[in-house]
Image (tube, rainbow, N blue to C red; front, side, top):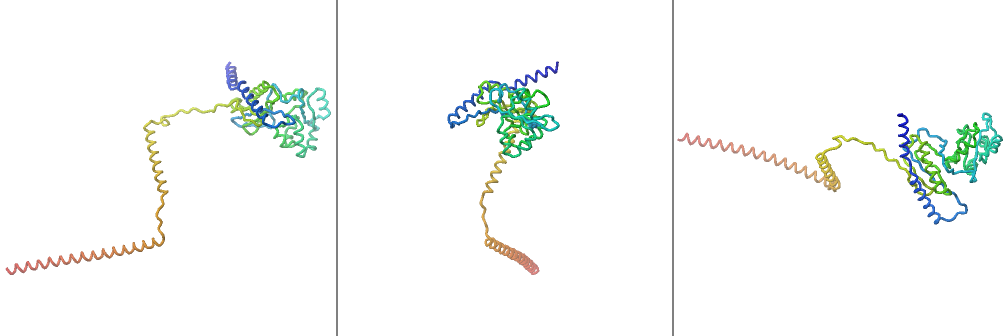
Amino acid sequence: MVKNMSEAAAAASASSCGVRSETVEKAVNALLKWRDSQSHSQKPQLLEQDELLYLIVSLKKIPQKPRVNPHKVPLPHPLIDPSTDPAELCLVIDDRSKSGLTKDAASKKIKSENIPISKVIKLSKLKTDYRAFEAKRKLCDSYDMFFADKRILPLLPRLLGKQFFKKKKIPVPVDLKHNNWKEQIHKGYASALLFLSTGTCSVVKVGKLSMDKKEIVDNVTAAIHGIAEIVPSKWGNIRSFHLKLLDSLALPLYQAVPDLRLKILAEADNPSKEVLEEKQEEEDASHQKKKKHKKSKGRIHEVQYMDENSNDTDSGAKRKDENKTDNVLNKKNKTALKKLSANDINTSDRKKKKTLSAQ
């Protein structure tokens, strides 16, 4: 019972985090209007090119286990439909002795089951005929989508080169041991491919301008909910969804609320008005001191030259000598005055004695 309740709560939270179809429809309308305004100002082209719509996914955390193989996100209206559009699909098979599969057997199975594969390439031929960079580039541009036996997937990055990774045409793995080839290939081209590598941002093709507006909206909403189920931690790890054309701005569809943790403030963190006033006064006083210090630093002080310094030192020495001589003379005068006063006292005493004896 508790388990069912927790599952229901998780489903409710996931549905609340979803994107409304109304917001998707507004974004699609804005992009279509922008494309119409741009088409009037641009020069007409000989060959009309069907432009794609891209869904940008931003994650909060980098996936711990990045993988080269893309995740399949089912779309209600596939971007590649060989039954209606002339799409070129290529299949790379494992023709080694261990696999027990040959090109003739694969071609017979494709024709008998009416599988929409236009080219079958052996692994041995991929090693020999497509070594040059130009040959790899032509192979990448020749087909809309690539499939490969999942047993040879570790060998393909070295054999195909960088061009396949740049254009997001990495072969979709198919288990050719099973007999349901048609079902696996249909699931591959009817899905949007999500590449979760070593970054937090991924781009997914979700629609074409040749589609109806409702089909584009259905594809975008289905891609958003499908990606949310594939991403680790689901909606808890998704930061934002944006929709754009190749040259347009990215219009926001979903933005996660930042996780701000609540903090309980203590009395020390909530000081009173008196403490705040004292701190403000201290800051003002320190600010004024800094201003005075800066002003004093900016003043120009008097410069004394070597000659002036030498003259000043000589005059100072002379003054010191004069002061010394004055002090010595003053001392001598004082001692002489003392002697004179003492002699005067003695002579006065003698005179007094003489007068007394005469009487």
